[in-house]
Amino acid sequence: MASHLLGLRVDVDTHDGMKNGVPVLLDLFREAGVEGTFYLSMGPDNAGKAVVNVLRRPGFLGKMRRTGAARVYGWRTVLSGTLLPARMIAAALPDVARRVTADGHEAGVHAWDHRRWQDKLPRLSDAEVADQLDRARQAFVDIFGEAPRTFAAPAWFGDERSLLLEEGFGLAYASDCRGVEPFLPVVKGVALATPQVPATLPTLDEALGDTHADARAFFDSVLDAAASTSWPVLTVHAEIEGGPYADDLRRFLRQAAERGIRPAPLGELLAASRATGAPLPERTMGYGTVPGRHGTVFMPLGT
Image (cartoon, rainbow, N blue to C red):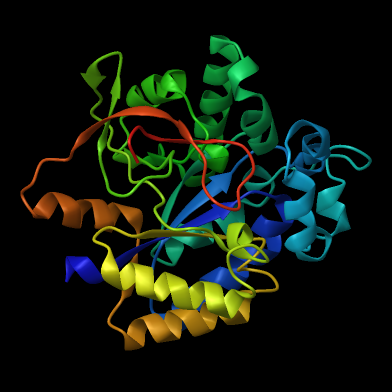
């Protein structure tokens, strides 16, 4: 039943997440008999440059502490692009990337330089925004031999420029924002043809030490939310659920099966939404906040 589908999205933000976390998740998903949508960062891992957020974004340091960032990501990643050189992500590990689709999952573009986009998008020129998207798209083509069918903006942070550029890529859909259901974004009064399939549920890194005491409590709440909402989408991270919280994710997937909740790629969730016969709603885009996440995220207004 469509009401029991759970969109399963995997974000890959770092070199070590690609190298170590993605294989762990692929093995775990094969064991559970589920498929999802993997969004791959393509270019340099500049994760260490997040340190500037300690000063610029209230709450960022607290989040790093309560999620145990150094333990989760490792010092090599925490210092990547600052004291240590940035390493390429998917572009450096094409065999790992190709295993994603070989195992039956969807693969899409997450970013070229994830950190630069996340921290500087409003200050990037139109040409720089286009360059970030074009370089990521070309890297995907170089790896897979075909154009990507889906994009997802880093940290759910996009703008009208990025939406319009994605519109020219012939995507099946994008997942650039937070929200409650699949929809068509409206830019300058016109509904675009590229649907958005938003992340609807909190992420583990947002919840740990804030709304939930531990990963088990968080995933229990996700099960309840997935069973009670029509188009739920859960985002997991290769660095987190593919790292120290892999066993918690394994337990979650086992319990989801027991409750008749089936994780699926976002494209399948969108197809189920369209199969209802109801047209996708049209939504003007804006920004808002979500609990446990510093800064703002892209979302349809009124959500």
